[in-house]
Amino acid sequence: MTIRVLAPELVSKIAAGEVIERPASVAKELIENALDAGASQISIEAQGGGVDLIRVADNGGGIPASEVELAFRRHATSKISSLEELGSICSLGFRGEALPCIAAVAEVEVLTRTGPDALGSYLCLRNGEVARRESRARPQGCTVTVRRLFRHVPARLKFLKSGNTENSHIANVVSQYAMAYPELRFSLLLDGHVSLRTPGNGLLRDVISQTYGLDVAQEMLALEGGEAAIRVSGLVSPPSLARSNRRYLSFYINRRWVRSPLLLRAAEEAYHGLLMEGRHPIAVINVSLPPEEIDVNVHPAKAEVRFSREQAVFSAVAEAVKGALH
Picture 1: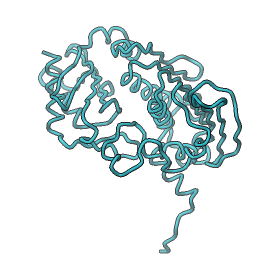
Picture 2: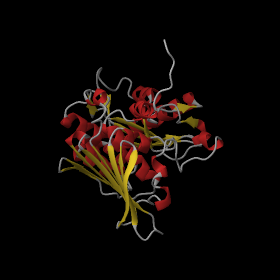
Picture 3: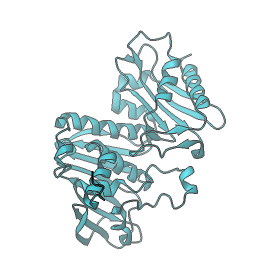
Picture 4: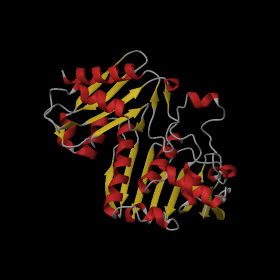
């Protein structure tokens, strides 16, 4: 067997496969960039299940004209600059992988402007390389348009589901971040139809009303608890309001949407004896704790975290939910 160094193009597509699993992954990465840029309004548009088009526009700080091309280089980031900062990450994106990974498997256009710039910077990339660059008018912020996702990666394209299914994954991502940031205005357009629009008034209950319906939002119970360094907040359903699956359990660490078996067990532990077998609660739970007590660098898509004090976090969540129920 011959050992060889892989071509850069192949390496970039392998890396993209770790970060960009499906169209919803693109939406997630671009939304996180908008949040880190300080946006107060984020609009998302998708067509053809996100394969034909995904566009995310925001009114955040934008990218300086001199750094737009740099943003599409692997491991280029404005979020961290030293090994020490890796142990206390406060931003959602920090690896510097998302934009180059997207550009490796799709056609990408970006139009962005910072406050000091007189005009916006437009960049068009094909196969990860700059095809066109020019100046264009735009208010402060950033718009990233992704077209023809996975068209040159047929192995990934054939594993995608129907357009409606992929749209539902995109809608879930947008809903999750809308619930994490109720003070921001989110809008989602799927194949020309408005799927979600949040008021941005800071009230989680109003976002849940838009996401799960008014009847659910009115019944949810306020959640507040924890200790000095671990604070737990959000809304949980009473035992009378349950679902047949766990899709309605949403967890956030410092408002980062995560998958966490630990938090899932903690929340369901609080409902022990209150729900019939096979029934699960609705919950939107955010855990705030010092960034140095979590490791967010354990998953390519930043979807999982590790806790330095697992038992303390488990107890804080379980007790906070029990307090809301009783």
